[in-house]
Length: 476
Image 1 (tube, rainbow, N blue to C red):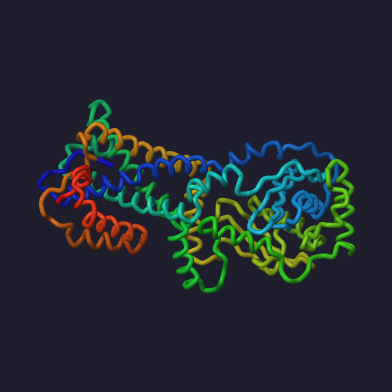
Image 2: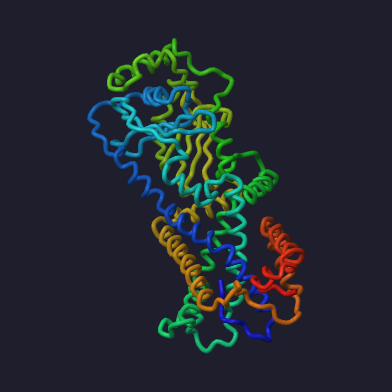
């Protein structure tokens, strides 16, 4: 956030240093927050596996109930819900995960595949890693939080690029203090070198994380969604959501059954599902008699046909099988792996179990593939544990930048003032810098809007109030 004073004869460089200071001042709390929550989310697979370990080591020594009966048990435990998706068990000893929905809410139900006992349930949005995801991208504040994070990310990009400009060696004597810090110099030199050198090594990766995270943002991602719809050769649902409201709408569509009615429980398929459920219901409070009130809204026999068909294809887990809904005409099966380039989606005929369409990642539009690859790398899942390690080191580097900047500011802070670099000379920003600012404002609209607000606020208000003007170091 701060650097040793640039040469007094270079007012333009000092102007950039001033903007670097203010960008860092605004971004620092958000960068610390994003780096901390992002570091946790990098290890989502390991965290989820540890938290759900009790569901993955069941003692199963007999035949499994039919998938339709497993779903029936899950639906009975959540009255009024419908099947959102059935997740294929990852191991022979794992509990079945059934996603049931009601409105925009999705609940994960854990079912013993042999006894049909409901072992537990949790709303998807209340799972620990989902809470971390929302804290990371929206501060748990919905659309407003997403826009605030997007604004901070935009200014963080400015902070990193301006920092690289200030770091660029002009009269350096060797690589010490440029490529590696002079750790034995102590004092201000130590903190300056630590800030500058860590910044230059981490900047490329940090910029990638900031840019690859923008498609999730409500405002920037929503605009990208519009551009995508105009460029896409054929209509196709994008593989990522733009905020909690978008995800809620998608869940609502998946939880809404189509006009054609589901199986009648008085028929053969319904009778078979009731019998499976009642056989394993003696240990489940409320399971007896559930067949009289449960309306599954899907063809139970179709699910029993499709599960072995999908399992034989060995898609990367987790694999979700979903019934027809307002979001899909036919039954679908999709790999929901975080390593998005490995994702595959199948469209299936529920009556015959035949494959109607297979869409692999490589068949998606170019823009979708670029964003999907970026998202996978952002989440640390593109190339295994090395991706996680690189993401973690980048996050630790950003935390180091914030703490070293705070230390340097504390050491140099003037009494009664914020300590922003003073304006020297009358030189304006120059044509090149103006073009760069306009370009950034077009690519990052929230940045442009906030920049205009800051400039007008400074000229019309802050400069007119003497205490604020002196504290902020503004010119008259």
